[in-house]
Amino acid sequence: MEFNQEFWVTLVFTFINIIVLYIILKKLLFKPVTKHMENRSKKIQEALDLAEEAKRKVDEMKEEYDAKLRLAKEEGDQIIADYKKRADKEYEEAVVTAKKEAELIIQKAKQELDVEKEQLISEVKKEMASLVLNASQKILKENLDTETNRKLISEFINNSKVSEK
Image 1 (cartoon, one colour):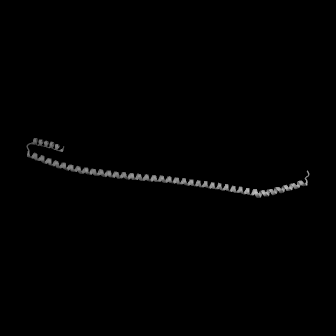
Image 2 (cartoon, helix red, strand yellow):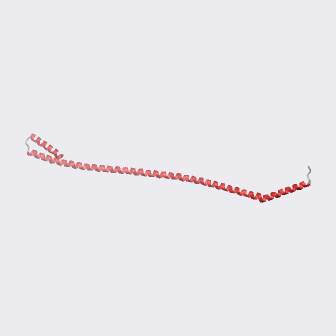
Image 3 (cartoon, rainbow, N blue to C red):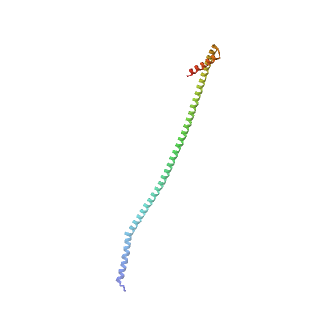
C-alpha cells in the first residue's frame, strides 16, 4: 500500500483540524460544561449537607423535646405526690383534731353527768333525811306499839314511792 502525498497532507490537515476543534471545544464547550457540572455538584453537595444538618438539628430537637417531656412528666408526678402527701397529712391532722374534740366533749359530758349525779344524790339524801325526820316524828308522836310502828314505816315507804313517780 502505497501512500501518496495527498494522503499525507490530508492526514496532517485532519489531525490539525481535530486538534483545533478539540481546543475550540475545550475552551467553548468543555470548560463551561465542566464548570457547570462542578457548580451543580457543589450545590447538590451543599443541599445534601444542609439536609443532613437539618436532620441532625431535628434529631437534637426531638431528643430535647423528649427530655423536656420526661422532665415535665416527672415534675407533674412529683407535684401530685407532694399534694397527696399534704392531703394525707391534713387528713391525719383533721382526724387527730376531731378525736381530741370528741374526747373533750365526752369528758365534759361525763363531768356534767357526775355533777348531775352528785346533785341528784344530794337531793335524794336531803329528801331521805326529811322523810326520815317526818317518819321519826310520826313514830315518836304515835309510839304505840311495834305493830303500829311497822304500819307507819310501811305507809311512809308507800308515800315515798308515790312521790318519786
